[in-house]
Image (cartoon, rainbow, N blue to C red; front, side, top):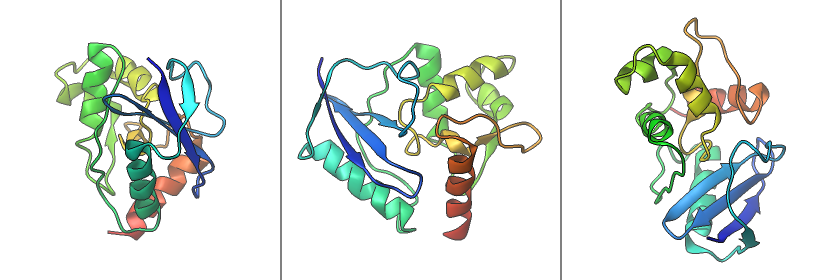
Length: 161
């Protein structure tokens, strides 16, 4: 499968939006490790309807006008990863939870490290809000976009209740 992509500027740097036939497949960071999210070949298509809508909704999010996204999402990964990514979608705007919380939610209470690994491979950053997952003690932990971006996103959500 060939994916469509477009880039957009944001307060956390340039983002690359990627869509496949079934919906949005990725939101990638400017300096993203190419091995973190593996997708097939891509062609630039700024006129792709899913990418246009994703860009619009992300713009609203960054301006404080949107708390939830309404986009077709297409996660590619293992069943375990998909269960973690689905759990991310349930974390309310402006709130955080721990890896242990996610592990309990998906019925795998001893899988905190595996949850962390799956969280780190979340292909649809921001929209599937992996930035809302913190350490058990509330500390900011690893994030594909960097801790500065994670801090920014959490602060943004606290500013716009």
